Image (cartoon, rainbow over all chains, first blue to last red; front, side, top):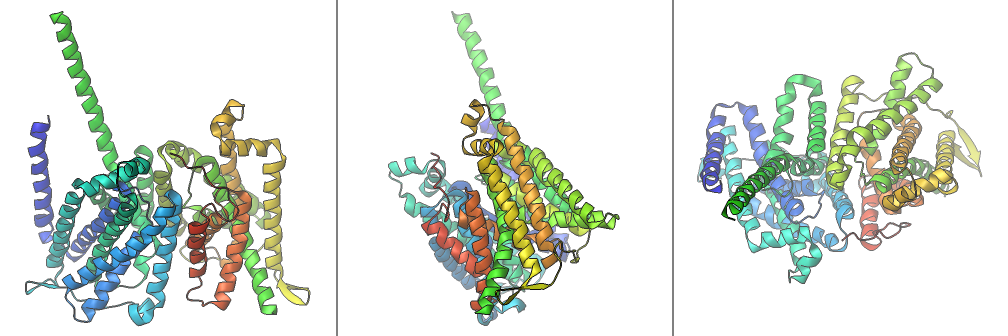
Length: 332
Length: 291
């Protein structure tokens, strides 16, 4: 079964990628904005999936890191720095702050950790709002330029969408590599059984901090793309509800599944837009949809698929066993 | 000096409301491991139910009774049966996320079916000041404090003095053993959900005259109650009460003496310090480590 499933998977992947490149070509401005937003939020959710889904550390601060990245990019690019440099600074900054935020995770776990990160998220929002000498306060930062890539201007929505999509591709490949590397296995060991991981010689302390720092750095990348996408930022989008939204994306998509954040971000960014035709009811319907989905499958969308595949595998295996058994009986 | 006294009284009054909400929050956590992110919205909704009853022509006292009953049905019974029961087995996180979605749903529903604007709400306590030890204190603060204290004492008496309360505590502390010795655990859990619904309805009745009824008013309140519950001790009713009063006073003092801009930061920093150095909360018991 797996021998023909692999080419099928590759073909499906290629079709989706081609679709993401070709289909939006005749989208309008708003459609492209929403799709770019999906790409950016997927990057942030992938970071949180690394921290939460793979390493098992609950964080309610991913929105704050998106904010840190966004402000770093906004401040630097409006002062004439190129975007790639700003992205680099955003990564370093979010990585460092994420590392420090990881320290509470060494002391407390689960819901307590969630509360510490929640408090951090609120503190970051207060800094964005109050330190107006740096962040422009409630008036925010406007006229954030979009980058020139190889002297090719990306001011128009379509080229910038490709910038977002390309960044998403790079991040996806990096995360793919990371979770298959020994580090990724160490993260999963940390999630499944920290005690056993430690007894196997994994430096749980370092990997916990790493999980936080890398996840946060991806939040910073998403922020650094968000700023030129909206071209205007103020503190409001980076309040606690963004962190909660990102957490929702990861859980709804399926925490600990590689493709979870892609689907989760799709539900969180695109579903409300598709429901727009219901006017005032769209967010209500969205909330009901999320609740129903979680009641049906608490492990998210990919949890449904996973369960279905597992069921089929056991069925196939028991069928094989039955055949083998009958053969054995005929031999005897 | 008189300023400090006023701040303390106002802080205690808000803190008493936080305490009511925080107590309900810890009750849900203890009996069913529900982290209710919609707790703030649970406080926002009853005021609108009461307003709706008054718009339909009911007098204020009847609207209050109807509002509390409806809250207990919607936020107690329906919340438990439709959302918590199917998800309880699957761990803390999915349920917490579902309550986040519920919070969005409740806010949007009120915005859509009632109003996006803030509505005034009548007070159960007459406005005006009385003089205590030479200080003018608003009747509203006194009334809020009195109602909250009565409610909290009533609840503690129920939990510690009656057989029903002992059964509830047993169900919370060790459901398996409680079931063996014949405690109807399911019914006890339902009872805590009803008590939580009653407490949030009461808090709604007390706080809405001060801050007006608005669909988004639950956000700040929910967070304050959340912090109060953790600071005081996540697994203790008296911890939640102490945490509520402390956060209320701290918040008011911070607004006056720190800066209005960073007022919200003070409880947060306090929260981080408490979690790092005393994770079980100021009055809480240390939780046993599972695994």
